[in-house]
Length: 192
Image (tube, rainbow, N blue to C red):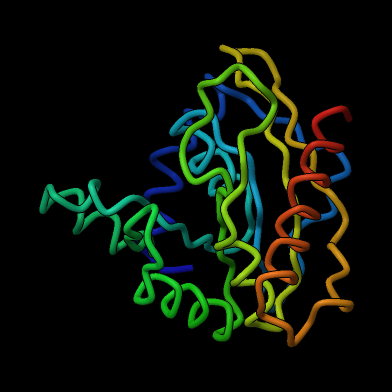
């Protein structure tokens, strides 16, 4: 965890009083490369996970957020990198794979954008499955229930997912199968 990241976590920590989160089934994030798959409703989702994780979490954000130079500098210092949504952004894919191969944590919101639909989940994109299949990482699902002012919200942390049946296969069927597994898992955790 970089010094800058520690400082930002300390500054952001009071937010955990305003929007407190209680982990359910929380066993902590294991060592080594970890891919977190998380549902996404509001900007605070990333902050909540970063504050509670014991290791630095790397995120992708839409490239539009990099148009402001100060924001771009801030994101880079925090270990965030940009992705061009709705395209096969090979630079972003390579960067995410590099993070995992270095034994770090990469958090992905498979919905690709904030869910304002009122439904539990939106359709998932296949990028998270690509990262999981291209690396030897553990995949930890996290379902974040809606945040409430000064009242505990639940973050349901699932067991590591078993992708052994798909490892080494990066094709249309395996990407679709793993993506469906991710969706079904978060859908199930939403009921916990």
